[in-house]
Amino acid sequence: MANFMIYHNPRCSKSRRTLALLKENGVDPDVVEYLKEVPKVKELEVICAKLGKAPLEWTRTGESVFKELGLSKKDERSQGEWLQILARNPILIERPIVVCGGKAVLGRPPENVLELL
Image (cartoon, rainbow, N blue to C red; front, top):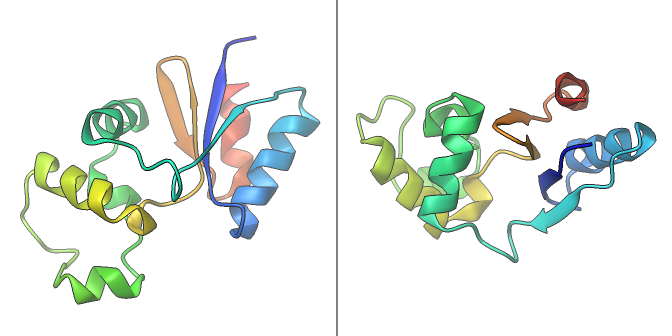
C-alpha cells in the first residue's frame, strides 16, 4: 500500500477520528503534528496541488487569528501570499489533511479519506 501522511492535531476530534479510521482500514500513516512541525511554504504548495483546492478553501476562517490578521474570505491575495500566511500561522490550516501519492483530501468528514484507500 502507498505511503500515507496525516497532518494531524491530536486536540481535534475530527483529526483523531480520521486517524482512527485510517488505522481501522489497515493504514499506519506518518503523523505530522503540524502545529509542532510547521510545514514550509513549499510543502504547503504541494499539499495545495494534491488537494486541488485554493489555500483559502482549506483555511480555518473562524479562528481568532484570521480576524486578528485582518483577513477576509473575500481577500484577493495570491496563492503564494495565502501559503505564506498559513506557514506563519499553522493554526489556520484546516485539519486533518491526509496525503497519499499524488492526492490529498480533507478529513471533514473523516470518511473522505476512504477515497484514498
